[in-house]
Amino acid sequence: MHNYIDLLKELIRTPSFSKEENKAAELIRLYLAGKRINFNIKKYNTWAFNKHFKNGLPVILLNSHIDTVQPAKGWTVDPFDPIEEGDKITGLGSNDAGGPLMALLATFVHFYDRDDLPFNLIFAATAEEENSGTNGAESILVELPKIDFAIIGEPSNMEVAIAERGLLVLDCYAKGKSGHAARNEGENAIYKAMEDIKKIQEFKFEKESDVLGSVKISVTQIEAGTQHNVVPDVCHFIADVRTNEHYSNEKACEIISNLLASEVVPRSTRLNSSGISENHPYAQKASSMGIKLYGSPTTSDQAVLSFPSVKIGPGQSARSHSADEYILKSEILAGIDLHIKLLEGLQL
Figure 1 (cartoon, rainbow, N blue to C red):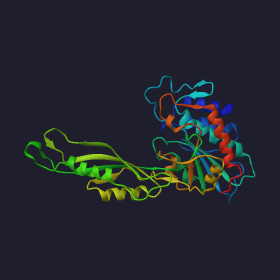
Figure 2: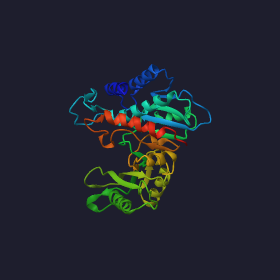
Figure 3: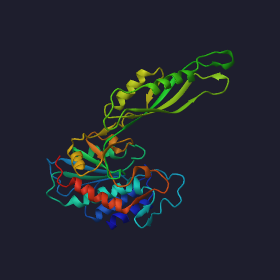
């Protein structure tokens, strides 16, 4: 346990913002090398296979990320100087996702030498999760064998997120015609946008999820006009859409586009909803152990995976991206123990 806490503290000391994870990746590689575990590299991503990897067995991916967000305002201590006070470790990335990363790494090392596993394991420490970049987990999938199941390390209080909302950001453009405000000329694009925004407020997607609920749409930004006496010909507003498993992002975009008079342009449709059934062997085992199953409103690397996955890890989601972010050593230790128990003898 002690060496994982030391590694976590070294990661905190090492700035690793998205796209700048090279030094953090090196720390993971040094650790694996010290354990005499061979690993693979692609840019700032690192992955390793269990020692007795056997063709024909199901493959489980253990994945968490090494990048962090920029420090939030309000830190009362140096975010890059880990402070250990009793059970508590404070530092940027300690909770999101240093603790979850250490728990999965320790779990992988625990099973690494076993030659009697009913599955194969791949451990991956990846980049660009926080900015939903394309050079992170998504980029190494082509290098890996077929994955049957993935465990994504994020702070969840060691509860199992069996489903996760997708994220779709839409740029919407209401089109009017410019004119002089004093002469009642033109067609006001703001009024047209208001009509569409009202449609969004009142619209409900038909299919609700037992775990995630309904699709959520929020208009979060709006801009129009150049000066007070000119009727604006364009009003640009942005809709944040959080999909459930019943709608791909492409389908949700199509439905909203058909609903509105405004032009609707998706920024990306790649971050889809994901998850597993409550009848999946991992979910059933977690339930039998009294572990809560839930649907997560936030996105992670699950969004870019095309195979069944869950999100679980020590720490608490509410601490992520906050000032004076912290995790408890006891949370990491309990997380390692629970990961091991969940995987021991798991039959996929």
